[in-house]
Length: 234
Image 1 (cartoon, rainbow, N blue to C red):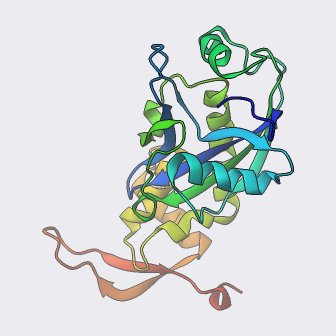
Image 2: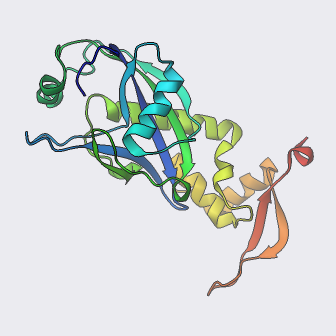
């Protein structure tokens, strides 16, 4: 990542990709290639933008170049502009290797997305030596202020989920109440009481029971539900 002429050295984009595996919430991280300097850092997919490149375009490019992901619906959620956000001691050696001016201020525009992990298999490319899903509860120390970026993204995700339940599309077309509770718990990062949760779901009237039950399970098959159509919600 050298400072080429077509790179804007002061503006970057970073992408927080949350992945749901049916039980847990994960975050997509990349580990940079080992260049023989003993510097291996995990970080969010991100990079400086190209001159003349739009921010949304840059975010799409970053995901493709670093993790081979495309067609991810990204939402811009915050701009991080602390003058010292890239000047921590833990990042200094890396900056000295890759930047002609390591102390150059960098403002980053952050995006987030929530995806079904089964639909997106990351593959490392460009300067990423590895692209991997990491449980939200087990995120290590990341480069720059990326831990803070993840925290803010999670707060935004939780707020948007509470308002409009957009993450329901990650569920199968027919799902059990237990699967729905697992989705809620993964996003809110809270353990929910089963009885109170089900009362709340009934009050919200966003789902409806079907005549179907689970098949091929060893326990008593549970009733399957579906999201109500927009017409029935009106």
